[in-house]
Image 1 (cartoon, rainbow, N blue to C red):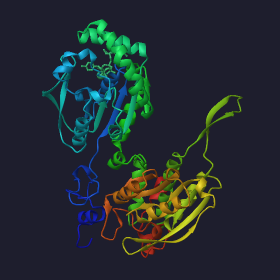
Image 2: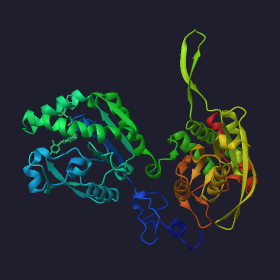
Image 3: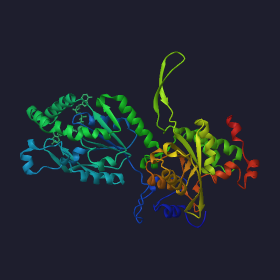
Image 4: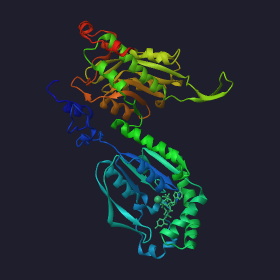
Length: 486
Ligand SMILES: Nc1ncnc2c1ncn2[C@@H]1O[C@H](COP(=O)(O)OP(=O)(O)O)[C@@H](O)[C@H]1O
Ligand SMILES: Nc1ccn([C@@H]2O[C@H](COP(=O)(O)O)[C@@H](O)[C@H]2O)c(=O)n1
Ligand SMILES: [Mg+2]
């Protein structure tokens, strides 16, 4: 390590201020928002935001309560859109039966956005308590909501404003029949709110039903998940909770970039990484374990390709409904280390075409495209871009830009690598938000030579046996591969 600290170098590279950064354990909650570099985004830990919309009395609150209950080992907070109802003027209060509580203008969305922004930046907020009986939002009896791992935003029109939708990592629409909603509403408004049934029905036909048709139902299309039967649908709620748990267990960067996929770590995967990162590992073992890891990443990447349903007849004469692989695909390896991934791709995709790109590094940041040989019809194919290490992201940007220039849609590119540095992830994900990155581990950062740390050294040299120390390593190395029996 030279005279500059790793923190300094990473700051200089990414414009992000890394405060309390420790080599031993990369804790992204220690990383602060940049104060000097405009436009630079922080690696601040972002909460997982779930939006829950649906008609009034569809079961939104019930579903949220069930999710919160099941996520008992996570810090979860519920923010209700009701808390952002505008307070009524004296005049509106006097004619409250003519007030439309189901119109988007009934809510102070600006205030909701400010509260969400604060929560997302680790600041506690006071959320007013809405009283349905007095029609008042009581700021004095506000509820203190602390920053959490999961924020659930619930309300009839929570998908209406695109700025609010943007905040959400997952959108759920609770879909209950209109008659069920009306029946529940009558019971709730008469029993809990002490309202007169005639007034409830009037409000329903005058405001609630038209607003559902005009403003709420049209937002159903934004939902990632639609839950029929609300809280009765235990299967849907279990699946949602499972998904949230998986997301929370992932690397922090996955919460920021939905196009980043880190394959789930197991002891096998950690073990293989331990071997290929060990400077004493022989070339033979390095290749063996790198190949195993590459195969996993390739298989995972293929899982992101589109597929079509296909039915076949089994030898028992039965119908099996399966899927057909996407056939319009090709690989593109970044010479030289990307070529190490070609065999795994060929082993998974029989006869796949593989193009090549050579990018020459000039100094620290300059990259120059030297050579390209790509399939003629590449623009009609899904492309698996192969490069085992994502460091600064400069050559990845060059390679992806070339593919896009050749007519490949951004969303048709899957970038496969073994190890990524956060800096490279930021650069690629920000420049190409529709390119998917599939990686097996995310490292701490880059050193003064812009090499990934802890990393594994020059991948190409170690894989192809062109590193200087190779002969010595052959002698000194342990023999883990035979211990594994594989
Ligand atoms: N699956 C269900 N079965 C019976 N009653 C339900 C069910 N889900 C919700 N309710 C009741 O219906 C009313 C509305 O449910 P709630 O979850 O508050 O809906 P929302 O938040 O969408 O208005 C509540 O009184 C609740 O107790
Ligand atoms: N003072 C108020 C405010 C709102 N409403 C109704 O509440 C419904 C939204 O709440 P949910 O829990 O059902 O999502 C909405 O339909 C409003 O009409 C009200 O009756 N009185
Ligand atoms: Mg509710």
